[in-house]
Image 1 (spheres, helix red, strand yellow):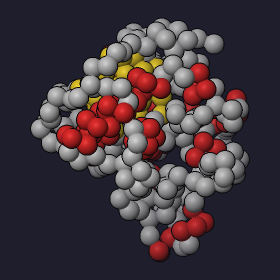
Image 2: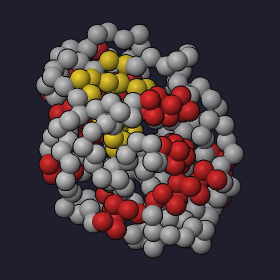
Image 3: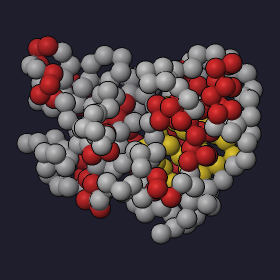
Image 4: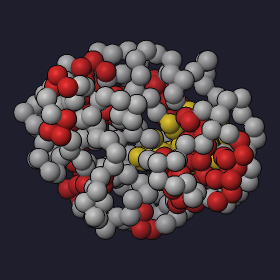
Length: 285
C-alpha cells in the first residue's frame, strides 16, 4: 500500500448544494505540515462557484495535497442492493455519479432539480412524501458499532441539517474529477500527487474537544482553542467567523494530524465491496 507520508499540504472544503452559481457556504482552507495555522484560500470572485472548486482541485493534481470534501461521496448501497432502487443498476459508486450528472440540469453542478424530481420516490422533502422513516437509509460507514447513525442521510432533503443537495451536487463534481485526481477509497491511495477524501467536519470538532451537538465555532477565541487542541498555532484573524470558514480551518488542521494514522486508511469494516459501492468517511476507523 502506498504511504500517506508524501502529503505535505492539507485542504478542507466546506461544501454547498445551494441553488445558483455563487455560494457563500463554500469555504476552502489549507495548511502545511508542521504547526502553522490553516488559512482560507480566497475564491476567484466574491464567492466560490462549485465549478471553480473543481477547477482548483484539478490544478493541484500533481501537488502533494490531501483534499477533504465535506459531503457524502455515495448513497447507501449495501443495505438494499442498489443506490436508487428501481432506477440505478451496478454496484460501483462511479456509475451513480455518472447517472446523477447525466440527469441533472441545475447550474454550476447543482443537483436540487435531480432531488426534486424524485421526491417521494427516493427523497423526503416533507409530510406529503409519506412517512419520513421510510426514507432513512445509511451507508456502512454511517452506522456505528452500537447501531446508532449519523443525524442525517442523503435521502433526507429537508431542514437545515440535510446533506442531500450538497452530496448529490458533490457526486457531479466527483464524476468530473474521476481519472484526474485519485478519489479514496474508490481509487488506491497514491504514492505521489493529490488525493481527495470524504470528511465529516464534526469528527474534527470532536477531536478538538467539542461536545456532541456543539461543534460549531463562531469566534476567534473558540477557534484558537480548538486549533491548539489539534497542535496548531493560533490563526490569523478573518473577516467573518461563519460556520463554513471555521469548519474548514479546523478540519484542515485535523487532516494534518490524522493523515499518518494507519487505521484511518484501513478501516476494519471497510470491505472492497463497500469501498467500491459506498466509499468511506476518512476519520472513521
